[in-house]
Amino acid sequence: MSRNFKIGIFVTLTVLLATFSFYFWQIFKTPNLQAGENDGNFDLFIPRGASYEAVMDSLNKHKVLNDQMSFRFLSRMMKYPEHVKFGHYVIKKGMTNYDAIRKLRSGDQDPVRVTFNNLRLKDDLVARLGSKFEFGPQKLSALLNDPEVCQSFGFDTTTIMCMFLPNTYEFFWTTSAEKFLERMGSEYKKFWTPARKGKAGELGLSQTQVQVLASIVEAETKKEDEKPRVAGVYLNRLNRGMPLEADPTLVFAHRDFTIRRVLNRHKTIDSPYNTYRFRGLPPGPINLPTLSSIDAVLNHENHEYLYFVARADFSGYHTFARTYDEHLSNARIYQAALNQRGILQ
Image (cartoon, rainbow, N blue to C red; front, side, top):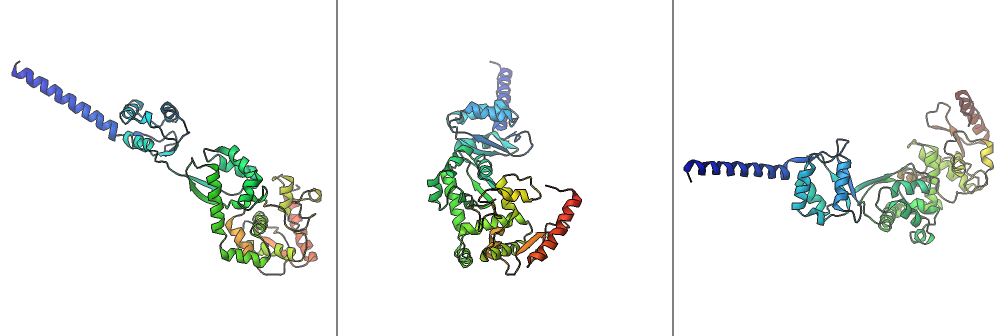
């Protein structure tokens, strides 16, 4: 074997080694995941029992992989097909094959952020929250409509809505429905500190009753500085044995949230939520009140107002009155403004 031939073999092997080394370096270290079609992080959800091919189908469907072959090659080297873990994983733009596969293989889940507010009905709550978890809306609905489950948290199937305090929470997507409710119950207990319980007791109201009243306040005004005054009006009416006559409860009773102007015909409905017809608080909340609305009831403004009506400037604020005659005068001004704008119903 000549010297030149040996040199040729050496050079060829060196080139091949360098080529394969570079290729393996690319497979391990070169960014290969572009995080989907939206050019941001991609949320990969892997259901229980999903196969490796199901994971690949999801990644390909959303165009996450630049080079599928290199991802498959390294997956097999790292034995990921035999160790698929269910859960929610955030695939970041520019992730390498190695980092992504290591994350998926180890089952290093990322929590999901769950935010809920502006909800009126239990069905709305079930749809919003159930869709955020693997257990789905149907499972959550079954639990929230089970009297024994609700009773275990101190509520019934109507008042169970009060346990859900609007906020942003973090959960694992694979959290069970039972564990989710336990967490909500824990957050509820955390919010109701001894100080808040004491204030509710001074009002002669239970925690649930405070939240029911807060839901009415929430529906009446979005102005944070006005909430304690509105709460004071309703507390004055309760203390005097007057019907609340809260328009938002009529809207809730009709389940028609397109109503912009409550008319006399709306007041005839036979419903426990008709606070024109039945005295006291309705049997449950008419929405999920914010924490500020709950605190507005507990820290209500002390005054002598018994009535209020929206201002004719449509600013979102209200005009308050101590007497019915004064209230009628204010109401006529607002009704004229509604007529002028063509808001008839």
